[in-house]
Amino acid sequence: MTYHFGAKAWAQTTNGIMRRRDRITMLRQLAGTQLGEIARKFRLNKGPAAVDIDLSDIMVPDSATSKAAEDKVSETLNRSLNLHSHRTYYWGMILARSKGLRPDPELLYVSALLHDLGLAETELPKAKSCCFAVNGARLADLFLQEQNWDVSRRTCVFDAISMHLNLDIPASRFGAEAHLLSLGAHLDVTGRNLHLLSRTTVHSVLSQFPRENFTADIVETISAEHHPHSRAGLLGNLGFKKLALANPMDK
Image (cartoon, rainbow, N blue to C red; front, side, top):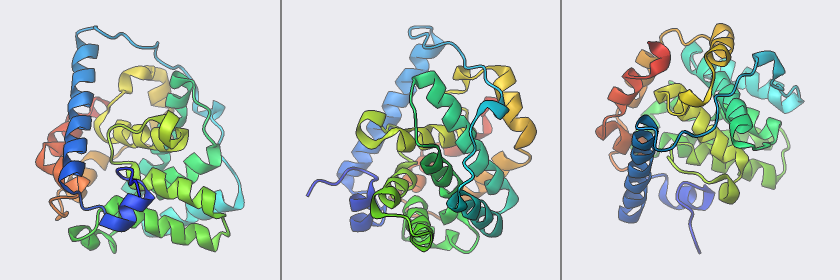
């Protein structure tokens, strides 16, 4: 059986603890990301024009499950992670415009809201033995079972949440929702791809969902004890704190 790095089958087999070939894959993704940033800074790859869109132009799903997910994160996550989860959705939807993608809004919204359940105060200690993204995907799946979602949609959310720490998730292979969830989360944490958004667009999101003390909070959370061979553990050892503290949104 083929296990896609970060996806459900891989997560259920490994608990999110990377094997040697997984660590090599993660390091390759990191190297590719860094090379892309170098190319952009030296204008070797100008990329698309910055997206200029108002927050009110972005659809917010109002299904029963979407409302239940909003209640779930309000009850489970602290304010900092709650706001981060909402911003992640908007960043993802805005980047979808830049990349010409048309995600399922409900799938992306629910995935974004629930993607950090594994960082809840009661769940974080489990990160010592299980990747928090994998634990979060399992918690999200249990929640969606209670919402009577079918297996295919639950699997889309599981994959998106479990994979969101990956640095390269091709939409053509894993779906627009997984691709955009990862991009949205990484943009909010490190500022990656911020250049694809206009200043007015960024302001529109931050005025409704302020960052407050998010950077300090997420640095503290990821600096907690994670299994050294989890993706969070590896990123922490490779300088995640420095990247988060250098996020241009905080300047």
